[in-house]
Image 1 (cartoon, one colour):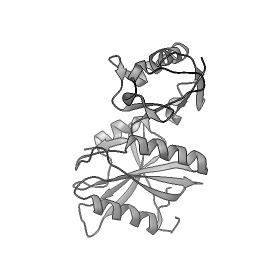
Image 2 (tube, rainbow over the protein chains, first blue to last red):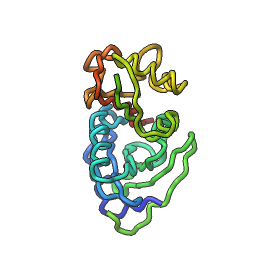
Image 3 (spheres, rainbow over the protein chains, first blue to last red):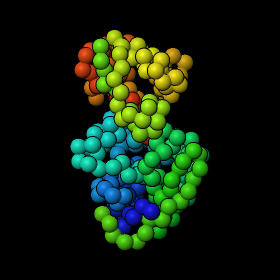
Image 4 (cartoon, chains in turn red, purple):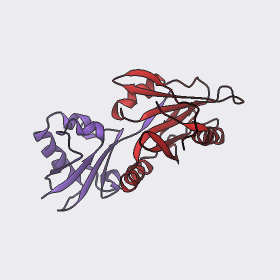
Length: 136
Length: 91
């Protein structure tokens, strides 16, 4: 269960829309399994098809997590032309980071963005519920 | 020479479960070799064809070693080395 809530969901959708048609990416810090902060990251791939959280921003984020007692809860990115489901590349590269949730924002229907969350463990994708309750 | 090496949660599993370990080396290349001696297989997680893997970053006190002297980057007592895989994906 990854309770996103309208605020977190809205922040990620807004980020995805601003970066469209390129992919956006960002990080969710959490406490007790609930997101407490949405951190927009620079997509260093600057691409419509790929994302890479800027390496230095990732390092800084992890240090911030340590300093603030946050967990690295989730990474999010947008799919601008495909559904909100991890691509084969997403799965392959998730091997280095099996612990955070992977949140996908699809803008295939720009009027009705879709947000879904997944675990990607040992190449296996499993969807996790995100709930509707406000939590951020 | 004692260097504090910090790794991600996933890498910890291959380094005896510790969030950070102490290792030795006059430069990053020697440091990684020292870790691999104690934890065989570590080298292959970080290196490809004698270079740091494209999707792995090694920081010396928050500076990416690619912008320092790469694997020959010199180390001194008390330095902190962080090894961080890239967080990436795409179609």
